[in-house]
Image 1: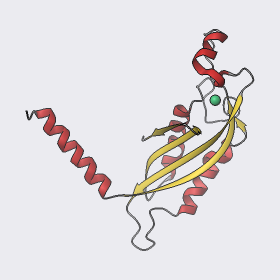
Image 2 (image 1 turned 180 degrees about the vertical axis):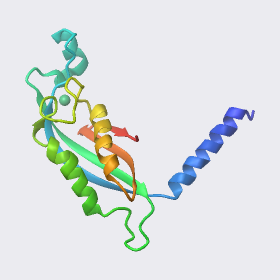
Image 3 (image 1 turned 90 degrees about the horizontal axis):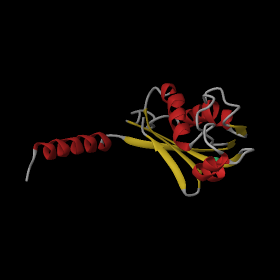
Image 4 (image 1 turned 30 degrees about the vertical axis):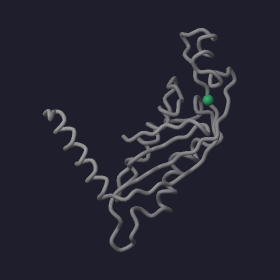
Length: 157
Ligand code: NI
C-alpha cells in the first residue's frame, strides 16, 4: 500500500542520493596515542569496573587512536582538488593530534571539559567542533575515531 509516509521517505532517499552523487569525498588519516579513564564518581568502584571495564583502570591506561577526517564538496576547477591535502593535514595536526598525542585526555587538554567522559563518541564530537570552523572551501562530512582494532565511532555533525 502506498502511504504518505512511504512517498515522503522515497523523496528523502532520492534527495540524499542526489546530494551524495554530486559530491566527492576525501579522507585524511592521522594517529595519536593518549591515556584516559572512564569513571562516574557517584558509582562504586565495582560498578565502574563493570560498566567501563579496562577503561576504568584507576591509574589511567592508553589507546593508539586512529582518526579519519572526511571532507566533501566539489573539486576546484583549476587544481582538481577538494582541499589541499597538505592544508587538511596541517589543520588536523595543529588543532587536534599534536594537542592530544601522548597526553592524558582527562587532565591535560584545554578543549576537553573536565568531568566529561573521554569516550570515542564524545571525542569525535569535540574533534568535529574544532575542525569544522577551520574549513572554507569544502564541508566536513565525517569524523571517525578508532580506539581499538574493533571499535570506532563516526560523527556526521
Ligand atoms: Ni580506554
